Length: 124
Image 1: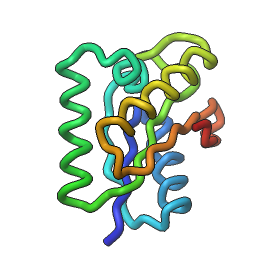
Image 2: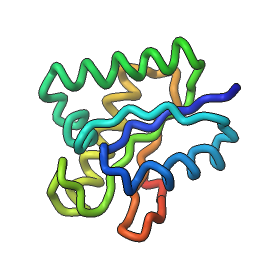
Image 3: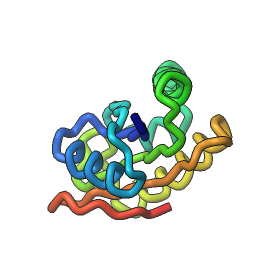
Image 4: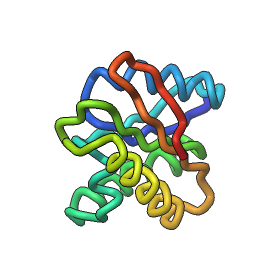
C-alpha cells in the first residue's frame, strides 16, 4: 500500500479533488488527510501552538506508520477558516511549506490551490 498525506481545510468541497490529484500525482492508493479550518494560516503563523503541534503529530503518524513521503498543504477559494485574499493565502502556503520542510526535511512538501470549480493547481 502506498500513502501520501494532505493537510487540508475541513471544507468538504476540497477533499475529493485533492485526493484524486494526490493519487494521480504520486500513484498513491490512500491519502491520509489532516484537516483544520485554514491550515495554511495556522502553519504559516505557527500559532496557535497547540494546533500546530497537533497537525505535526498527525503528520508524524502518517510518515511513521504509513510511510507517507509526499505531503500537500492545501488552501482554497472562499475559505471560512482563512478568509483572506488568494494572494495572502498563497503567501501562507509558501510559509507553511517552508515550515513543514524544516520539521520534516525528508518529505516532499508541495502546496495546492483549489478553486471554486474544484480544479487543483500546484503552487509551490
